[in-house]
Structure formats: structure tokens, C-alpha cells
Length: 269
Ligand SMILES: NC(=O)c1ccc[n+]([C@@H]2O[C@H](COP(=O)([O-])OP(=O)(O)OC[C@H]3O[C@@H](n4cnc5c(N)ncnc54)[C@H](OP(=O)(O)O)[C@@H]3O)[C@@H](O)[C@H]2O)c1
Image 1 (cartoon, rainbow, N blue to C red):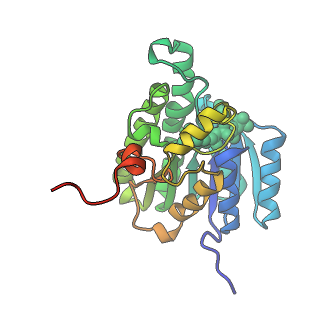
Image 2: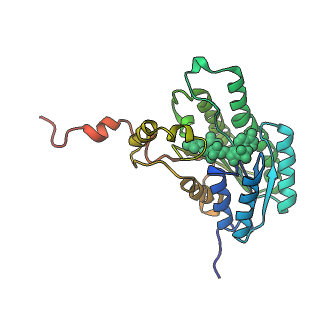
Image 3: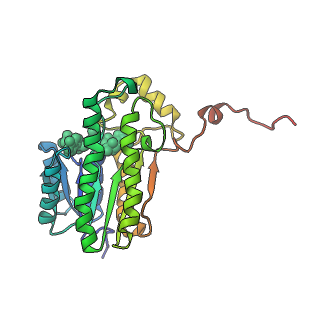
């Protein structure tokens, strides 16, 4: 009899109606987990819950706008109720509504982006952390971004939120290690989703960004989902406080010019 790596685990995934969150929810279900999928709700979210069920798992759609702290509290409680407990929490909802020079950032865009990415993460981690540490086991995964690892021109304010979540990931990994709860992060590079559709719609931007990536491609949500399944499972039992970069080599590369144009052959003596 085959044994699935996440058989019997109960997972919650935020931002699961499309893109990376949807792929992670389906990946966890394929690996054997029951999954509560959260987003602001609607037919797309219901469809993902149905896709979880098609994989033979318990799937439930829970409406939750993560910019409202009360809705997070209610959604975590509803997930625990619906699944009969919780073992895995994937904090994926996030994004940005605007890109441009930092000096043009409005207070409204900053507040929205901070609420969606950072404030929501703090609230969610408090709620799921209380449950998992009391239980004495669990895995938390924060979807951050390579933007949070370095300088991100025209998205610096968004990158700052992701950098803060990377710090939270490491701090909580240490705080909760004794309680048996692992906390890790995934840092994707360019992934083709609705969030990046404003970039991929323009050939010059889409191909220009792709050209900088050593693997020479945009990622797809499943690239992130496969790594998420690994980090949430026992195969990653010693990983906590880790930030796994999934960017086709982009942040490892010091210079694209060196990659493409350094002369071949022996340097002059
Ligand atoms: N795509 C990339 O290149 C990339 C790279 C690095 C990191 N990331 C990160 O990966 C995560 C997922 O991004 P994605 O590319 O999959 O984005 P996406 O396609 O725009 O999906 C975003 C998801 O978040 C949900 N969401 C948006 N606002 C919400 C809110 N206020 N409350 C609850 N749910 C909300 C959306 O569902 P509803 O509309 O149904 O609420 C949707 O399910 C984000 O944290 C993003 O920062 C993405």
C-alpha cells in the first residue's frame, strides 16, 4: 500500500483561489492532506475546494479577507473546526497593487500592501502559532519573495514587507522549535500569475526579465507548490528558519554580462 507523505495532515492555505496558493493547496492534497482554502471568496475559491475533493481529500472553502484581523481569527477557527484540527499553515496571500518610484508611493498603497502582506502575516502567525505550539507539532510556511532578499527597484515598499516576514520566519522558528513547530519560507522569483500579468503582458518586460534568469524561463505555480509540499512534510524535519529560494538562479547570479560575454579562453599572462 502506498503511503503519501502528508497522509492525515490538515492544512490551511491563504490566497488559495488562484496562482501560487491554488497550486500549493492542490499539491498538499495530492500529497495526502485535507485542505481548507482561504481567500476573499467566490466561484474560483469554491472550484479549488472542489479540486481538493477530486483528489480524494476533505476540501473546504473559507471566505477570509486577510486585511481584516477579525476575519483571520474567524477563518483559523473555522478551518480547525472543519478539518478537526490543524497541522500545516501556508501563509501565501499577498502581493502589491502598484509599482513605481518610491517617492510616488501613496499612503493608501503603502497601508494596503503592509496590511495584505505584513499585518495579515503577524495576525495569522499568532492564531495558527497558538494552536500548533499548544498541540506540540506543526509546520508553517510563509510565501515571501526574492524581493525581500535584496533591493527591489519600483517595488521597494513591497520588498520591505517580505523582508520583515523573512525576519519573522527566523525568529519564530527559534521561538517555536522546542514546541515542535517548524517555520520556513519560500522565496519565489518571477512566477507567471495574475499578480505579474501586468509585466508578462508586455513582451519587452516579460522577455527582458526572463533573459536575466539563468534558467531562462518564468516559473509556474507548480514550481513553488512542489517545494511547499517538501517543506511541509517530514522530509524537511530538520529544516526550520530556512528560506528556500526558487528563482531559476537569478539571485545567485552576480552578473549577466559575465555569464554571456566574458571572453572564452585563457587570460593574458
Ligand atoms: N507571482 C510572482 O512572481 C511572485 C513572486 C514572489 C512572491 N510572490 C508571492 O506569492 C504569493 C501569491 O502570489 P500570486 O502570484 O499567486 O498572486 P495572485 O495570482 O494575485 O493570487 C493572490 C491570491 O491572494 C488572494 N488575495 C488577494 N487579496 C486578498 C485578501 N485581501 N485577503 C485574502 N486573500 C487575498 C487572491 O484571492 P481572492 O482574489 O479570491 O481574494 C488570490 O488567491 C504572494 O504572497 C506574492 O507576494 C509572487
